[in-house]
Length: 459
Image 1 (cartoon, helix red, strand yellow):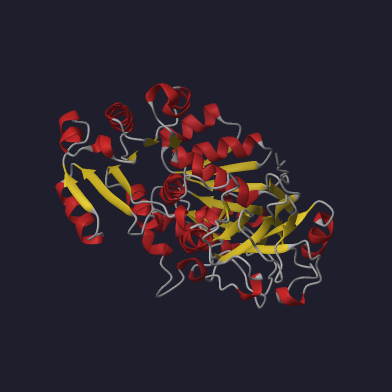
Image 2 (cartoon, rainbow, N blue to C red):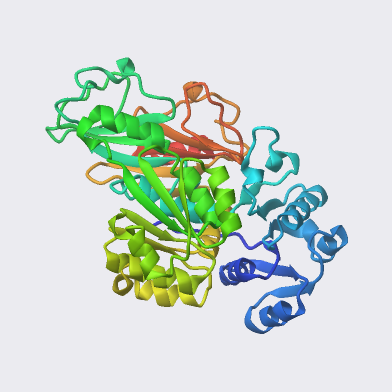
């Protein structure tokens, strides 16, 4: 298990709603100096009575308010109000006043994640844009997309995954060195355990044969194509997915399941939302109706679905429909819980309710922010089963000897593979021509003997 270490620093949290309250609580327990800015007097009183933090009444998107809160001495400014514009303005102002502060803005509207016309994050000078609903959707999608994937840390908010597969006799990739195998962009073969139990980190001259156990690392959809090439029988049959509620989480989840092998239906009782969903996703079946009605679930034959995801903003409805779906025979039931008080109770009753996975927007956001705020320069994320390989995530230091250099020019062990580069604005499986920048998080696969030399190279 990795151990997170945090520096004693000042953090300003704007917004004391469910997410802001939760973050302030866990960060103060970690030893951070927390100042909350909140406009609502009721919430201020609640925070003042229950949390060991400083709380100030005011508008977080006001430069003078940020000054009063001590923004010039803050290491992080985290704006998590319910209003996207307030969060973006707050973080943009904080960055202008204190360029050394790291800024995090919570956003709901997926527009801000669309970089086709403009990179909003770069334009406003914000270090991280976090969408709680999108983070929840990533957790839900991981199970649906790849139910048999290797249980390794979620890299880059679901953009990069690790999977293992045994090479079939019928594979056309056998008997060739990897340099002659054309893999799609964004996919790497990381390790190979040969049929005689010999283990190696994959190199250009590595030859895979039938019975070998191969570890793949890359973006989800191209990786599915490679898995099919390694074992044609591994092609996953179409999955029937039913979503209850046309919420932001549902919209994000549909986008993540953008593949013909997913047959998606959405049950939504608001007629105008149904029309919006139908226009947004013409290949998705949208049904106008209340899924809390057992009759509707039976009429739509929900029991025959592979996955049922209850993702409305109404926890009571989510819980009841999940129980109904499980009893009707759905193979996998997933549930979104929004209220903090419900989360521990429902989690303890997960098996009794017939629910396989429970996710929460505030917990998903909190986990992501803990990764962002971690002061560790290197975290050991996982050790691959049956091998000596470990996966490290290393924060590139400003004076690291790797800064400004292409991967091909870096001195490193032949037992080390660069698997991913996480920039502030994007994440990718790198090529030999990619350049390392200060502040990047680099994911590498190596062994225990080479671990320290890799850390020294990057930090």
